[in-house]
Structure formats: C-alpha cells, structure tokens
Length: 145
Image (cartoon, rainbow, N blue to C red; front, side, top):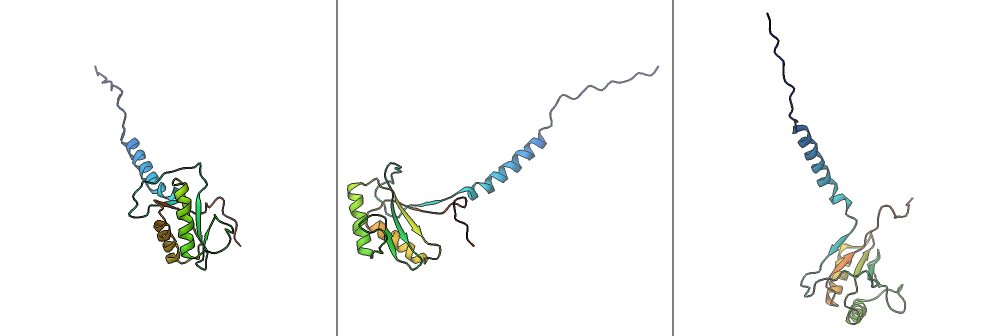
C-alpha cells in the first residue's frame, strides 16, 4: 500500500512585495513633495524679533518692475515709483504703528536679481523681521501668447 502524504497549506503572508511597494511610494513622495511648494519665505539675517504670521492685517507689498523701479502699496499714489529713502521711511512708519504687518516682495520676472535683493535689504533697514516672496500660481497665471 502506498501512502499519500498530504501537504499542509502554508499560513504565512509574504510581506516582501508590500515592502517593495511601500519603498517605491516613499521615493515618489520624496521626489514630489518639493515640487508642490508654491512660494518661498525668506527671513532676513540679523532679525531680533521672530516673524509673526498674521492674516488679519493687509500685507505691505514692495514691488520691483522690469526696469528696477520700486513701488509700495501704501501712500498717496501706490503706482508712483519711489526712491530708496522714501521706501524705508514709509515701511518704518507702518511697522511702528503695526509691527505685526506681513511684508511681501513682488519681483518682475525680467527684473534684475540685484534690484530685488536691494529692496529686501532696504526692508531690513526699515525694521522688517522677515520678508515673503510673492509668486504666481500656475493655475491662476494668465495665458501668454
């Protein structure tokens, strides 16, 4: 008589494929996470106070156009270019009355990098603890032809 040997079913789960999938997803998220960043916040060096994130106050926006002219969204005529001294005086006056005011810099794509950096240095001189850079979201950007 021949005896048949029955094999018992294996009751273990092979987790190696699950670990492989997890590691692939981890790599995908590590690569994709930096691409999702829409803006950059830059802290100026030698700031004595920590920046206060406040959404209640209207931000103070310093703009630099393609020609390197500076503008500020406060004052009698926000569309008029300002010189460096006027920009520092106006920003310092706003910060004396409302120190929590967020300060943003808008630089034109064609603007000289040095002009944007000089505006940031002027804002630091005026007492700004931190400055945010404004970028345009690809979803809201106007179509260019």
